[in-house]
Image (cartoon, rainbow, N blue to C red; front, side, top):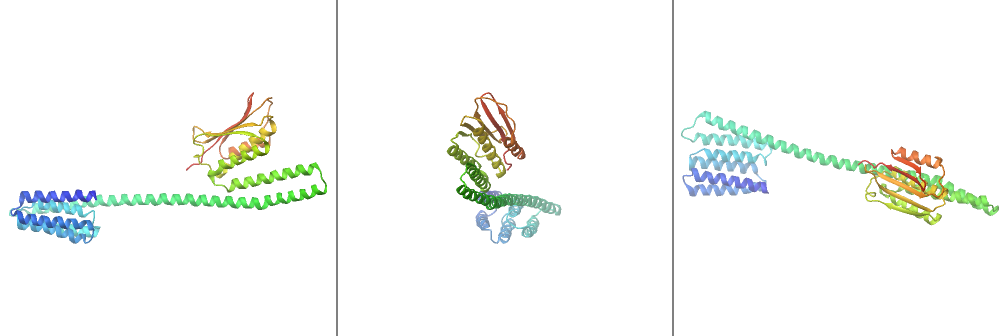
Length: 361
């Protein structure tokens, strides 16, 4: 709307200067000016534009021939109208309008007392050049708008593609979770039932230990299934559940710290599972190999924006340690997702620390 008013003011000023400098009959010129202003207002409706523009050019031509006899401002106004029409008319209509304006300018020039053919041709060539430049400018604007529309569509398609990929991953995870639940889970349940029957027939301590191991394996399987089924941003929640379970069942006291920015780090489901397994193995080692029940778990953000972790527990009698199956498997898991892990021991504590790279967006 602002652009329309700027063009309207320019059109009005041209007419005012035209009338003030060249009009021989002021009342009739003001009447023609009023009609021209009214017609120009109708252009904002964007209906019958070619007819309205031709009528405006006809008014200018008639005013020049009948009321002024001068060509300067009238040709300038027709130039302005040709430029203005380029933004509203389509290419075919604009060509028709430009050809019409050439005839109007020819008639205006022909009405002058002293005018040469060279001057008329020069005016017409200048008009053609003016219109061509304006048309090229409009086409460039249309191309730019088309490019922006295509860019928006590309971004929408990219977002849809990511959503579809995420849905496919979620569906695959759910399928794997169901397969694990239906196969391993059911077999472990059947094993527990058989052990229960054997313990009733022959009460022995070994059966109780086997039942406990089977029960723990079943619980681990359920936790793994839940970890697979969860969305990517629920990895921390799974870790919290693990800590709650160990605190309740093993009387472990865990100081769990989340530093600022951790929850906003994007991690894939695979990396969430790796983080879960690292913390699980570290807590299990703390319960098995140390007398203390205190463990500190800290999750933070590294300088590179990746997720950092540190699990430490106090030790009273430092002893040399070796990488057993659990630590070796944990290290392989972290390295598979291109992370880093450090396991070391000081005089006072045993520490597992490292980083897991964030997911690229």
